Image 1 (tube, helix red, strand yellow):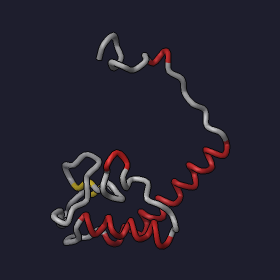
Image 2 (tube, rainbow, N blue to C red):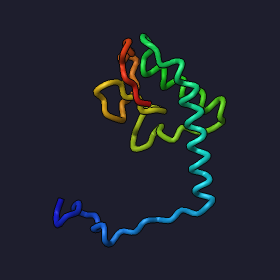
Image 3 (cartoon, rainbow, N blue to C red):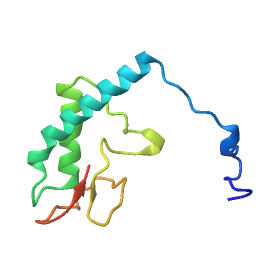
Image 4 (spheres, rainbow, N blue to C red):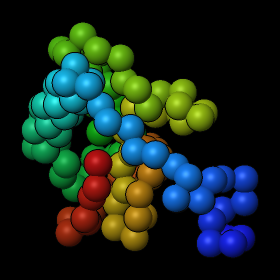
Length: 110
């Protein structure tokens, strides 16, 4: 921080809040409903022994094949997967892997 703000970024007093149009709000609301549907589909699959890669594949296939949508995470700033799946101590943005198998009692954030 420099002078109360990050270097290269305008101070808060000089930034503005963008007010979204009703159409933009409707699109965001629709996207929220779609992701809720994906999470509801995924819930019964979050069990001991499944890998985070398996869960990611389920998310990807459901989004593409069932919802007929494009997963927005894939390729975003080089991100290689559909979902961020963070077990236990991984706070956020866990990258799914075939090496990460869930165990009984794991806490999982998708």
